[in-house]
Length: 72
Image (cartoon, rainbow, N blue to C red):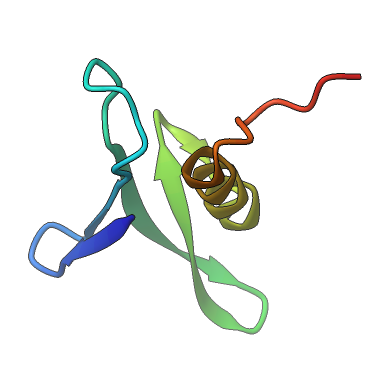
């Protein structure tokens, strides 16, 4: 798994070698916003805020061959 950061476009691309060829890389956009204590930032994918912990955990599970979804 590799992570690329493009500072000019403010993009993060996560490439996972375990992903099928037809699946796309995860492309995240960094958005800044004002908060009560100053400025903060979050990652956005498809116009929705990304939980980075869940994203990385899913990518690592895919690398380990476990899969992303837990079967109940």
